[in-house]
Image (tube, rainbow, N blue to C red):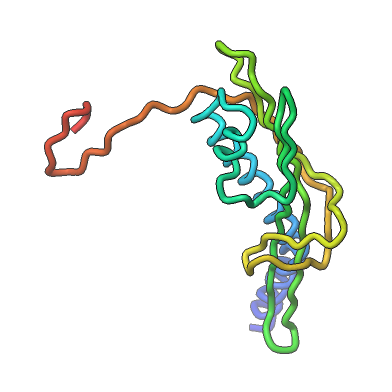
Length: 176
């Protein structure tokens, strides 16, 4: 009986020792946020690959989440501040860690035809006094990082528009 309990405790200790710390989880969440920002800009640009200037800014950042926007002749850049708050434990072992990063999204214009431009999202140093968009609202964070992976993709063709047919309805757009 003692061996079984000892074995269970050993396995439990090994499993908890391998678990990511709250700071590691928050850092992973911030990387996910960078990836999400990148994917959002890429998707919006895919649907509107030819706009430039103010029209492109409106198309890409309609809600004005960017801290700074710079419009150039060949590209537009958007500075965003993203973060994550991770809580763990409870009672006396409660811990809360927040990590944030500033990311620069560069939307390069294409030359037409098959060149629809590109979107690159990379971590950059934050300006002083930045507040970060986290799961718990806009706030300051404990740790500001630039240790994130850059994402860069060419703007692709938009996905085809597809009608949604529900079971039991008349469907005129293929499938059924």
